[in-house]
Amino acid sequence: MAYGYGTGGTRAYGTNEPRGWKHTANRFALLPLRIFLGITFSYAGLDKLTDSAFLSASGTGSIGELMTSVRDSSAVPWLVDLALKAPAGFGYAIAIGELLVGVATLIGLFGRVAAVGGALISLSLWLTVSWQSTPYYYGNDLAYLMAWLPLVLAGPTVFSLDAMRALRRRRMP
Image (cartoon, rainbow, N blue to C red; front, top):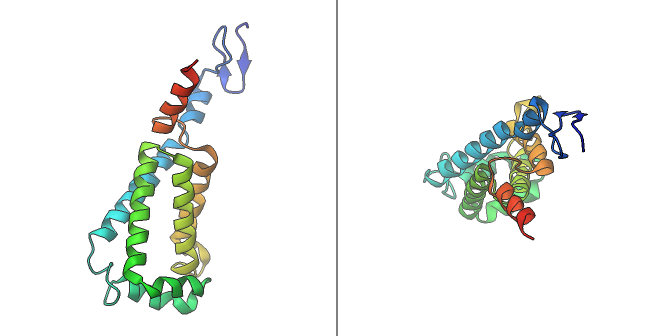
């Protein structure tokens, strides 16, 4: 176990742990994305939960009005029909889901599960609300869906409860 070189920089003497700026950059690369998505989804959930108009079944700015307006242009009208059976309940489900996904992403708790949840929320919003956007890249929900995928694959690597739990498991005999 001598001092060696690797793709991530140098290796610490007597260990297999890479050192150097490339390794550090790789470890922290997804942290800005995780913070952005965590804050954005937490805010979106709180914004919906505190907006009484959004959580109404009908009326200006309500989830019911939104679902009715996108029903015919949606890629999955059956999903919109399902939401229209209980629009307020669907609004609460989306808002609470966004809040839980956002907080879990920020603190790094069950990070991959939270990222899958965020991806599913973004996918459902893209297929319903943003589907009619032309050209397709005007619909921001597709970009959010793509942003969740690296976190699904890598999970929270630093500054997370998941990383702390993994370290604790490795240290146990």
